[in-house]
Image 1 (cartoon, rainbow, N blue to C red):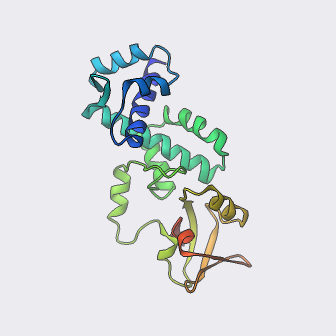
Image 2 (image 1 turned 120 degrees about the vertical axis):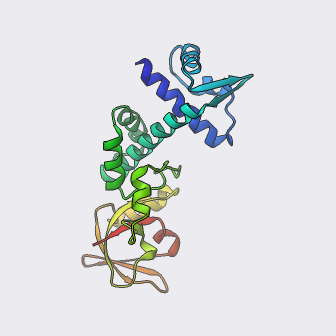
Length: 217
């Protein structure tokens, strides 16, 4: 339990850094967490070299940042898995991802990342820190997963994941049946993208097409 609390605090520090341009005030950190005995947890993290507390500000050390990055990576990949593959609703996605992140080891995390096509952001649009598997994939001559906009007319592909900050856009695509795992063929690129799914054709604009990541089949 103590280790879990420490991980949650490191994750929260990272998250607040993203929101506040790297500045994490201790008062805000304490206010944003429900971890019991927060002062004790902060003292442990300080003694073990994960954080520094300077005046009213909390900072991650090099050691702490490395651990926080891994925690954030596991959490956001878990969100993508729950959202894109398991279709878990948003209300329970975050709490479920919190549980996932504490038992995923690096091998399983890399496998999930590869399965999802090395996504660059979570369903909320926040960056997913890359891992070694992402760097390896980026060196391939042909990208494993690419935006739909990279397809040529006639190309066949499978939807890997969808990245969008607009929930109504995701709802629209879902209602049309355009979900991860669906086989598609790009019918045309101009003046709008037209996708063939079985006997159905769907027209989408460039902005939406860029949100859809696919794998050639």
